[in-house]
Image (cartoon, rainbow, N blue to C red; front, side, top):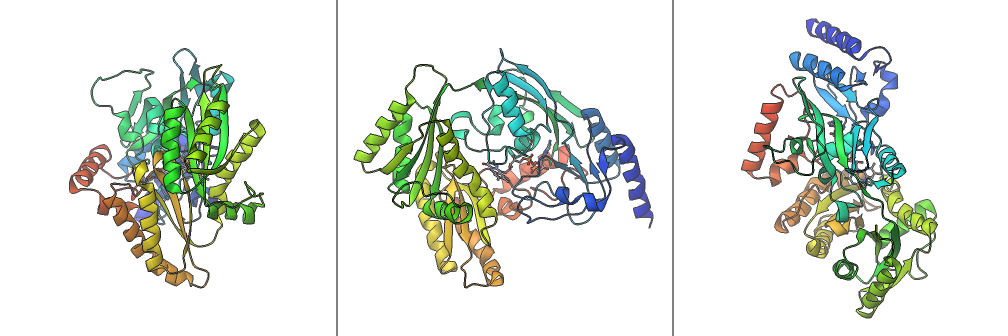
Length: 473
Ligand SMILES: Cc1cc2nc3c(=O)[nH]c(=O)nc-3n(C[C@H](O)[C@H](O)[C@H](O)COP(=O)(O)OP(=O)(O)OC[C@H]3O[C@@H](n4cnc5c(N)ncnc54)[C@H](O)[C@@H]3O)c2cc1C
């Protein structure tokens, strides 16, 4: 009784800190904050907070730290591992960054943008483009994910090959720590070796160490030339060879190298009614994009010549090079629609995994083999950023198997695939993070020293475990 009185009291203090219209306490209006994109994780919360600035977040965390109230930071809620969803205890507050969505500065000389964490990724890209600059981070959720979420998950996406993951795009950061103190390090420096690089702690830590409130991100020249193509390769090994050849032959102008197998095309045809890409059905496809900021580079010719050589070498069966922007956008929309189509494909087990690029064929053939041994007649759908050694592997429940039987096999299947990954020096979490979904794997596949260090960091930055409790570690 006393405890609930205390909670009521804290909740009303939190409401007065954020102010009228900046919170939701009506359970009926909370749903979209309490369930994840794939609808696999559901939580409860007494209060959704929508602070307007860093100082208010500092006051919220000071109070929550004093009373041990868990705080779940939330961006666009597009995360795929349950990291932005509160527990079912109903005792954690959700802190949405959606009202902190201002772009504060675009510096075209230093090629930087300073912005608040709640800015939507596609709006960040557009704002940069208006100033003839490029912010290259790009992923299918860009219309709703936020830059704070991207940095907290160290998002990857389709432009990693050229520009790196989200971490590599950050120069400065402002973070509110669990005790309410503010680390303001919004520097625009390209070189800064003054002590430990503290911002790196918060990039990819999924809101478990502090709340990212502002950032300085890197901008780039806008590519003037771009050429996009869909290439049907003879097999996965050929796709990898094509990537290496293209890197050599095109002066490393590859912007994207995205793989999808025949099952992806079939799913797009069945669910979206798209027309098949080529007259003939092939098993392996790669979306290749070259880009350059140089005016007189003939990327079309470069790509066509490279593809012609690859056809001679029997690495490529067929290819279409986009003849205009519209066709290029159509190619990209195939890739971007895939995760949305697969969300409703039925019951599946999904892996977001990576290995050194050359080992991808081995990873896929060995994984398919063990999955079929455990789950007879299962099928798979594979796509991903193979230019980064990262695939998304969906193992689909056989039609004649009950959901319960399929779920019974889940942990055995996962362990078998993760054991293969360990042998191949790969990662069980390439780009989506740990959240709730992969906590066990983090324990199982990290060394004691690594886990020990993570615990030391967590304990020293958040001794009361209020920051996104129960996630990651
Ligand atoms: C269709 C689709 C395609 C996707 N494609 C990709 C892809 O190609 N590559 C990829 O890497 N991911 C991809 N994702 C996953 C997801 O979009 C990314 O993880 C994204 O970076 C999450 O951003 P968000 O704003 O939605 O964060 P949320 O989902 O709201 O949160 C993610 C995590 O970050 C924490 N967090 C959020 N904001 C903050 C903050 N300001 N401070 C501290 N912690 C915070 C949350 O607590 C949570 O742990 C995809 C998702 C979907 C739905």
